[in-house]
Image (cartoon, rainbow, N blue to C red; front, side, top):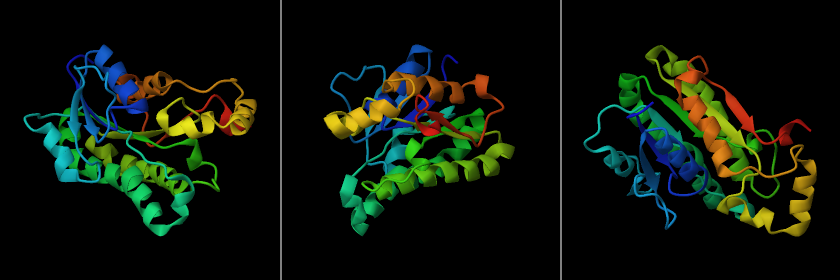
Length: 231
């Protein structure tokens, strides 16, 4: 896969960064786009600061590039109990779903030309409800649904579209749950594999879905949760 180009929203931190690093290690060229980045983000990952809800600004990261082999929408926000307020609900939906959908549509001609593929970041919360984060839950269910629609619509164009549904992963976003002793204990007790995932473990599955190894896989939502969703 040497020389292929990928664009990753939210590629400066967490699962997005881990995905960028994994692809980089296999010879991909990677553009990470978003508002946030780790201070030690590898220089070989080209970071473009832009609001993911601004499609025009996001596309400017591709100035001078032609074909595109992979698009990964990892950018996401979580506002916990604030999501019961309509303004916060809408903000979460806009970043987690609408921004990725809009950018995927804008990038489709490039992906079609290169025979590329798309991976959208859903979540185990696409399966469960959440009293504390209704917008995050709704957004991830919507990601899974729109992934299926894009997969059906774009398969004739040679573009595969899949999503992944991570469980509990050690990222900034999960810090609140990890540092709550009582809640963390309940979570740990339910995960059959007995531990939280590392971002690199999610990245490995995203890499598979982008690769020729997944040439006949489209429209799926692949859980990566250590068995959490089956018990």
